[in-house]
Each structure stands twice: as C-alpha cells, then as structure tokens.
Length: 291
Image 1: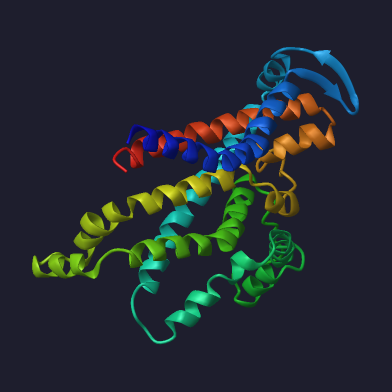
Image 2: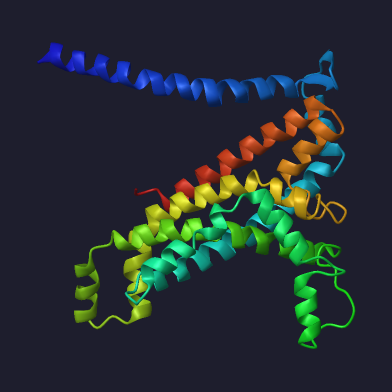
C-alpha cells in the first residue's frame, strides 16, 4: 500500500511537471527579469549598470506614479462597480424564459467579439467633438448647442473611457454570471417560495451567497483587465487630458517606449504586478475565505 501511494505521488509530480514548467517559463522568469531590469539604468539600447532601487525612488518622488495610481483607481473603480452590477442585472434578466432568449444571449456577445482597437476607433468617431454622431444626435434633439468634446474635461474623459470599456467587456461577465445562475438548483428557489420569500429576499439570501465563487472569479478577472488596460485608452485619450487617464499600464508604456527609460518602465510594471497580486489576495480573503 505504501509503495502504491509513493508511486501515485511520483506520478502526480510527473504529470504536473509540464504545467509547472510552463508557469515558470511564462510567468516566473518574466517577472524575475522585469525586477532585474527595474534595478538597471537603461536608456534606449544602453545599459549604464546596476542602480538598485533608484528607479523606484525616482518614479515615486516625481509624482507620476501617484497620479497614475489615482487614474487607475478611478477608472478601475468605475469599471468594476458598473460592469459587475450591470452584468448581474442583465444575467438575471436572461435567466428568465422568454421568446428569443437564445438569440439575445448570442447577440449580447457581439461587443466582446469586436477587436478592441476597432472598438476604440469606432467610439472615438462616435464621440468626436466636431462632427461626432453623439453630438449630432444631441443637437437634433435640442439638447446641445455647438460642440462638446467628451475627452477634454478630466472627469468626462474618465467617464467616457469607463463607458466604452463597459460596452466592450460587460457581456463576457454577463455570460459568467449567467452560467453561475443556471448552476443553482431550482428546488432552492421553490423552497424559498414556499417559505414566502420575496424576489429581493431570494436574491440577497439565496442567489448572492451561492454566486460568491463566481463573483470572486469575475472580480479577479476584471481587476487584472483593469490593471492592464492600455489599448482603449491609447486610442481614445492617449492618457489625457493631462494625466487624467494615464493609468499604470499606459505609464509603463510611456516610460519604456516613449521615453525609452526601460529600467523605470520595468519598475512601474513590477509595481503593477505587486498591486494586482495584493488586490487579488484581498478579494480571496474577503470573498473566498470559506470556498
């Protein structure tokens, strides 16, 4: 029996080795290399040698990291709150039987299937200040006189980026929540109905607790996407106006490929990695303690 257990243990290690090697090659080594780069003074193709934590000190003292962090929190907070609530409401609606439900479920994935770069170009044209379709519609309805540039005001720019990102990505979380709702046994709801629970009570005391693992997965996915948001912001606002939408991922791009300070760019990237891990651990601690 002992020999059999040892044999099964060795078999388990052998079968998991390819996956572990893949993780090491695609995650551990790049993260370690990013940290190595963050300790180097690299400008363009020239490496001037080891500087320790000077890159971290510089980006913190410059104030750019703080402004990028604020932009990330504003963007991320808006995206996560809006998309999680909207996705849950839509998923609850699609979980009810009605004519054409399968067609609606298919159509709702269209925004997610459109390439992100195309979404950015489409919405930048739609929200253009001079001849954008949205402004033209408002003028026809008598709600706007003249022009309105939706990306020149700091607050409006953040709101528009959140809007476009939500239009693009909410549908995938609708599908995640819908799968979770359909996994809940119907006899739970039947028992709650017999006990006289209202629809709101069933949602709060039955649906939400049972959906906690699904919500945790969605939150982790959405947080990772938020911390690495770049392409939409690059196309829509270019990080502006000023630094209003210069999130951490865009700041990393600027340091590495605009200013060619690869050491500082790697420092921002490594800080971004640490923040993603910390927020993920907080989610798991708060929502997944008993899972």
